[in-house]
Each structure stands twice: as structure tokens, then as C-alpha cells.
Length: 194
Image 1 (tube, rainbow, N blue to C red):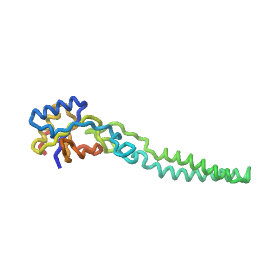
Image 2: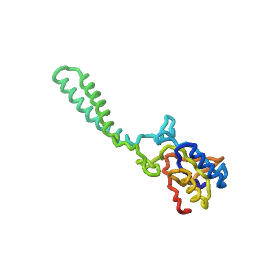
Image 3: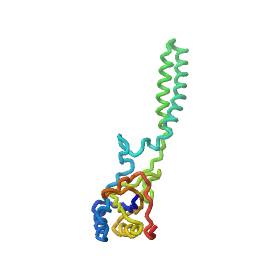
Image 4: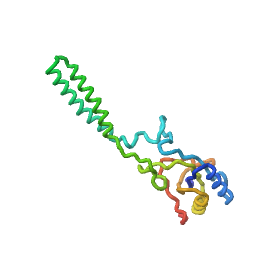
């Protein structure tokens, strides 16, 4: 596993200037990788898009939908039964009352089961409030050794880099192959060589 130090830049030009500064300091071009990180939720990890199989805010919705559908379906059946007993001899009102009650109950239950608190503001170091992901931006990643990590981190900050991080990953053909945009970054301590 390679030691990787990376920083986020606002533009490709800014990242390119930082990369040139690092090359001027003796780093080979194949140790630098500049790429764009999409906003959280837009990484297309699934065939239909997105980062997660399930929206975290809807985890309780199926249970609530089923429970509320059962209760309102039963109430609809009772209302249909009262209608049958007083007005008609057909069982259609019971079936219709059950169906309408179950439909309205499933919709109401699903809405009640959703988390109404939406988090759109990123926390420090780009970690979303749900603990996943990082903000969008241009990332300059540097494959380095432990001896030069603090020096490279300092140069990245001096060049305008933000949220400097360190990681261990696979580096092949001048690219950080196993970069995971959902993984929370580990801040690089600029003052130490740890």
C-alpha cells in the first residue's frame, strides 16, 4: 500500500499550479494525480446512480407504511361493513373500504417513517453529518514516502490546498486506483512526520 497525501483545490488550474510546484521540488510527475470528486450522492456506485442502495432518511418507512396500512385497512373494512349492514347486501363496500384504507395508510405511514431532518451542510474536513463522503472539488493526490509526507502537506497548503489528508491505497500508472469518495478523509498533521 502506498502512502498518499492529498488536498482539495477549488479549480483544476489551482491544482495544476500546486502540482507544478511539487514537480519543481523534485517529485516525479507519475507520483501526482489530479482528479475531480463529485458531490456526495453523485458517485454512480450503483447502476441507477447514487452512492447508497437506500436513502438513510427512509429506513423506517417500510415498517411504518405496513403498520399504518394494516390499521387504516381494518378501519376501512369496518366502515364498509357498517355500510353493508345498513344500506346494501353486497360485499363490494367492504373490499373497497379495505383497499382505500390500506392505500391511504401505506402512504401516510411511509411519510411518517421518513426522516424529515435533511443534512446538506458539510462538517469540517468534508465529512457529511451522516459520517460519509466529502465535498466536491479537485483533489491533488501525491504518492509519497513517510519522510516527505509533512513537507508535501505543507507545500499543498502553501499552494492553496484545503483539507489535507493522508491515506493508504493502491497507486498504479500514476493514479490512486482505489480512491473511495465515500470514505471519510483522515486529516494530515502538517506539524509532525507521523
